[in-house]
Image 1 (cartoon, rainbow, N blue to C red):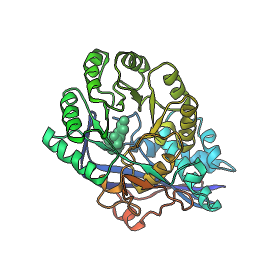
Image 2 (cartoon, rainbow, N blue to C red):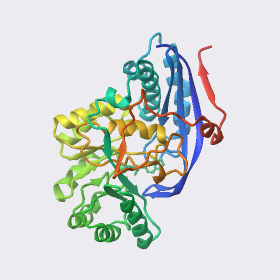
Image 3 (spheres, rainbow, N blue to C red):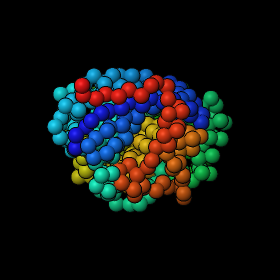
Image 4 (spheres, rainbow, N blue to C red):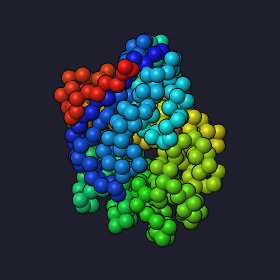
Length: 369
Ligand code: NPQ
Ligand code: MG
């Protein structure tokens, strides 16, 4: 296909409740959507970067700028583009994986809509529904945390993930474990700890957690190895896993025995599928992370989570976990599961009146001149 134009759509989606993590509190999702206009039709992708560079080095304004100034012009200049060729065309730009992922996803959406194939079929999904978990933010008090967790258990979520940080770890985990009994439970530190906390984190072992996610900084594989040797709770990397090769390296070094896969973080769904495959080869289970995506990104995540080796429930929550009104038909939890879309491409349609009504910037259209 030929890429005729790339459009950037910016909107603000209010969250149903503020989401607090070790790196801050979000009350609204600053969303960047990418539309590619191509010779075979349009496609859409969602950029998962946050408003501020506090989860990773990428952030929404930076993604919009690198797409505008470097990535979109390169795709538009290319004679022939397919989803499989996008990564190679964009390789001259270092990093910026979330920005690249949004573009590759939009190209893939256009391509698959044209040939009538769904993301799930293309990725190699082996199930029609996926087990869902929910990520629970740091709460103002233990009582409020328990109320929120109970509401998710009542809704049918099959796994609870608690955000933790120094000063908010053992107590909330103990209280939630008592509340939910045998229900699957895991924690996510988003890099808030250091090597000096290894003994302290060992105190989590008594709670029978599925895993502890990313206690140390992104670049620090070595301290995760030390932790994995010191505690019985499995260590799981999120931020550190920036591509399939790093996943293999972290696994073989003993830093991670379960892997969180996020397509945006690894540069796109093609690399996410490769990451899934290399983990399967090493008999390492994976699960699908989440970045507070709208229905557009959620649709793709649910398709990814339907692959064979996604054996743990993902952060693929229902639309109403985050948004009163989603940009697509809402994803609704049924028996703790979401259904994998089967229509071509992402399989969902954006509600254009919402995309326009929630806009915070004029649409930016990048085309050749
Ligand atoms: C994680 N996600 O697994 C991330 C981090 C995260 C669902 O826990 C706005 C946009 C707020 C993206 C907060 C979950 C966010 C965000 C947290 C991502 O580490
Ligand atoms: Mg995480």
